[in-house]
Length: 100
Ligand SMILES: [Zn+2]
Image (cartoon, rainbow, N blue to C red; front, side):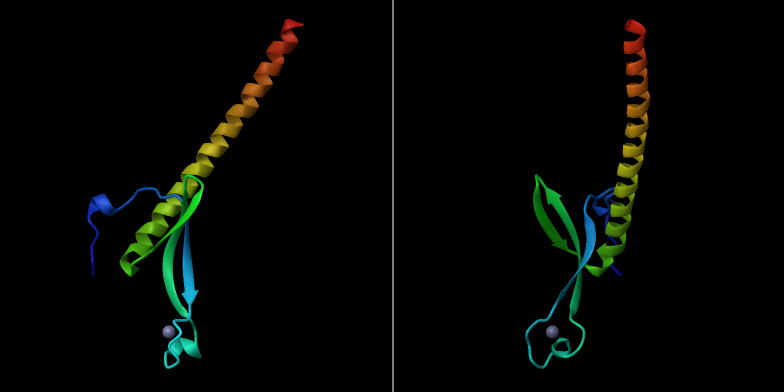
């Protein structure tokens, strides 16, 4: 089993874990009749451009975990920001009422 160095283990990663499916085109391959070949990949975008990195089997679990942590962190920050927004807007409106 390949163990990735700690520096290669990301805490958070943006993007989505996807599975690429393709038929290789060799007439004798099992994929010609059966299930297509499957390759896990990380789909992400940088500067508005979509990118993709195919993953080695040993990378799938840690990438999935990092993607999950990123999504959870973003959801947490969004929830916090919207709660703050609601309080700030309510306070701002009350101050404006008080000025009248
Ligand atoms: Zn094939």
